[in-house]
Length: 37
Image (cartoon, rainbow, N blue to C red; front, side, top):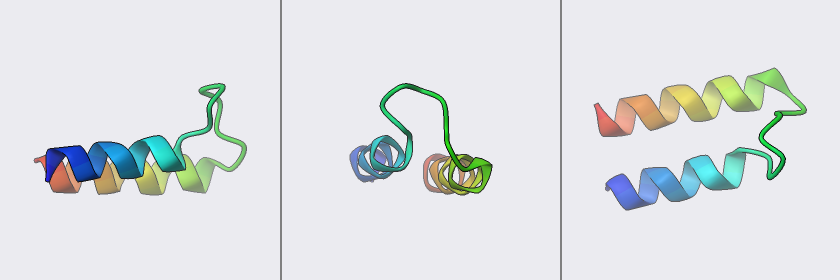
């Protein structure tokens, strides 16, 4: 489950580390924390 959440976070996070859309960053962050918490 941790691996899946990491894969989702990597797919949602931009490669350069700066999200073009803040909503994508927020959604991926909350999804990551909900799965791993």
